[in-house]
Image 1 (cartoon, rainbow, N blue to C red):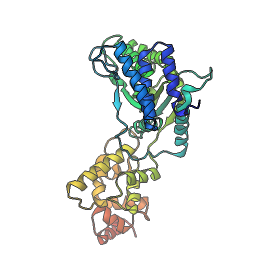
Image 2: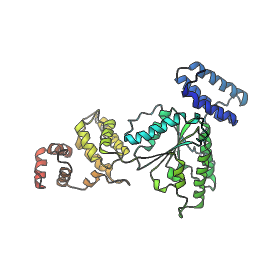
Image 3: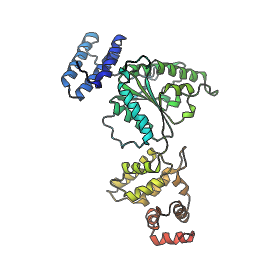
Image 4: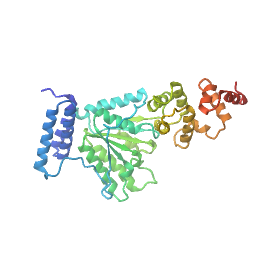
Length: 385
């Protein structure tokens, strides 16, 4: 009998749950296998599996109880500890990564597709991936991309919400979180990871938080090969050395390069607003911006565009928005922020010195909303041509 390799992982997980007498795990992965079979065109087999689940429900549980994935909640507040991200309806521009970064991501996805079914005693523990770098550099989007590629549900745990004011409750929350991941076919994404995985040697932290780190490490170690764990942090220097060792894949994400920024502008906005020449200028002016920052600028410009009955936008409309959103930010120096408090003469000088070919007199006139003659006169006053 030939079995499609796409379904081996789910069969292994179902058998694993049955051997452990874990009925929830068997149900969850059987339901997930039925979804995959139906997506592959085998509706008959999918219906047979769902019928088995319904019959088992009627035999082992009250008639009014139906199969559902109950999300873990905080024991005190009853707030959910995780959030289910609906990937099927989510539309996002493509990620902009360097080829070396894509190599790491693609290797992880390739291994994750078959990891649970590999028959090798040397392989143990959950497959894990740590992303780190400045805010807005694509960590959450990359988590969504990986889950989509694997065809798995994505559950996001915001770890600052796991920390309870009640002694010992945080460790219980972590246990509930990992119990859910062990029984459910999903990608578990630990966002704001540094909230829990801080250095145990930090003398300013309470003993409870240090115990929480130990609890996290123990729970991560007990996860089987059927589990996939992603984590993200903006403050990698706060992570305990033992935490680093638990993640078999690691990826640093930086602020985008000029080429990446130009592509981001193109993905976010150019089809309706800006030319290729404009994109090059916008990419240069947005030095120091993250991908999320550029997306925010584009969203603001598009709101203006649609609220003015599609009145054409120009570079002079984008320039003040860039300056406005450049203020603040913990990471990197945003070039355009240095122009915020300058007069027009100084701005002309700085941009001409930065790249005279890119910032021609005509381009500066368009960018600043001035006539070309005025820009020419200002550049002369500043010792220009």
